[in-house]
Image 1 (cartoon, rainbow, N blue to C red):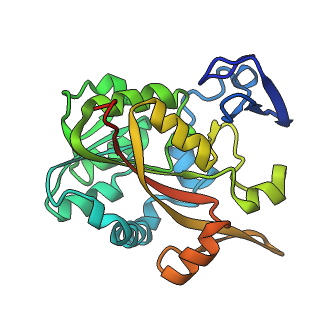
Image 2: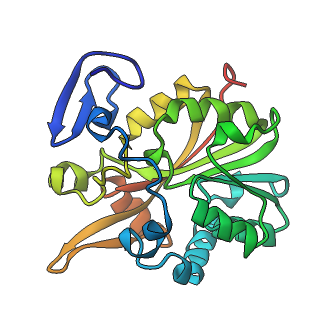
Length: 269
């Protein structure tokens, strides 16, 4: 077994099927044990009962959350242009951006979700992975991955493709989980965001910045989004991104989910 990022053989087992590269710091799922088990897992059941209670019925809530998050990052975004949402699911974020007069595109591997985005919301969504979409060079002004990076079987390859299709002044937005958070370190294997076979990669802030730098990006902003609280009923999501004080105080260490904004670095442009 070698690291899927740096190819190092210096790999240790964290617990169960979770491995960590001691050289580059990337934590990842033991792919050999899940070979063939990650195909076609984002079917209708994924969105209706298996992972989400009912993704479609959560539309109004999810749209509101996207609008709230946009308030945090809008100063970094071009006021017009083309937007690509990678892993767009049913297209709720694209719906928000279309209403703001952006030209929107989506990429989604789930036939079920992509079908809804195209047929019900009339959105321009490519069913498949990013590479098969074959977009032109420097085509997009904004590219987003909302809780997608950890699902990708080859994040490095995807980031390289994103660099190719993002304009020189474009912005990449990545929301992903942070394995370096205090909650993750304390809870260890009980951390609720360990979620194979759906979550394949786990990044600390340092590892994420390193991967982005290696693929031609510079991080301009990290925003903590949420953490988890343990209750008698299990773990409850605690969102504090709307409150600047809580975001600053709690987000410094209780940052299980982060939003990372990046631009092309000079050497990567």
